[in-house]
Image (cartoon, rainbow, N blue to C red; front, side):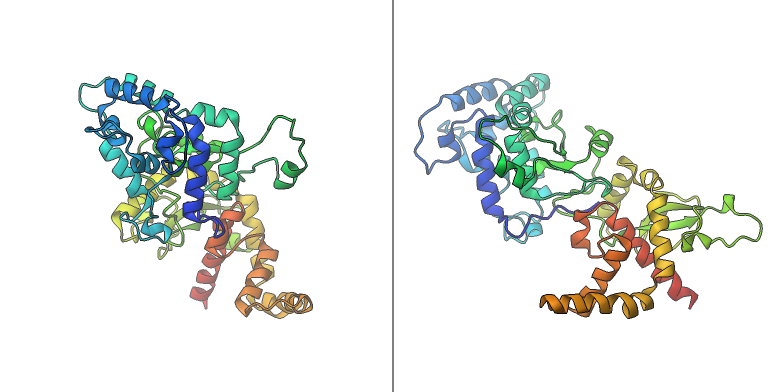
Length: 399
């Protein structure tokens, strides 16, 4: 639903190189084959991997080893583990791939099982070569990656914090002799380990997520929104539909907009679609999204993660937003709240635009983040931002 964006301070190449250093201990390849520019001894792991793959996974062998010399294709190994050397265009790079997902698909296209090959044995071999279980068991490096990506909220649902402990401060105070213990988010394998075991430790196949979304997704293989490249944004938005079955005779169907009633349903629709139909097909709700492939991924994401059903369980939070928006309208915010914030910023010597002051005021009142790039910082941010936009649309139509 929301996009994972690498922090500005974490440059792509630096993240990639650091990840390769850390993941090296969990794969059956010698360090010299990952970092040929460094001096390191022959550990013998690469020979074992080559033997395994030659016997049980020919396409993966050809992808990772030269058929002529038998030497490791270092760039392919690094690409498999940590993405292409030059970031794709979706990451602001100039690489040959438009998106990071295109890069993963290119690897999959070259590494599929050959017909007649024992896939169970090939998967078993991959588990030995790419030891994801050890990666999560030892914790330190799995923890480091989560901290580096700075994903605070599950990107699939935007409902639950992906809290990671200990904090940076706790780590600095921790005695070196103490065992490393952490509480962290789960990793979803965007392309499941069962079908794509060679991607088990691929950096951009690991999506920090909440347990609920991870369980809902399991190993399903439908095309959904890939959080490293794309998001719902303002293309698929939350809308509120009056619950007509619960209305009393003569009761205003839009009374819920003041926050005094919970007689409404939560739906996800295309950005230009306003509908009060209580029962409609998801395809119809998203019909104004022009890109059919993207529309299908949005639809599949909504269904896979059961987003409409889950968000209908957040009526308490929704009513808080509706109530605050009704009593503290735009005029009130600009005349009463913004001047107070502006005065405080002036004392601090901080200069910001009027739009930023207004965003700060609404954030304070509605406990949300209005800017899409900030939705990753707090649960339900997209929902609340969409509702505020929705009320503005309804209000303008009434005027």
